[in-house]
Length: 57
Image (cartoon, rainbow, N blue to C red; front, side):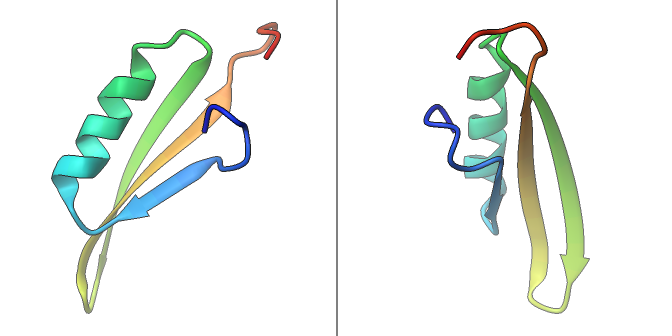
């Protein structure tokens, strides 16, 4: 995410998704969104980020 290659992360393990979301939320350059999708294989946790306007990265 820091290289601005990815704008989302999907994982079945909620601990990894939550840790990533809290880590990214500490930086003021990101707006962090989280989602839970319920499917046949279980819950998929998504962490999505957008760059804050006016931040020069």
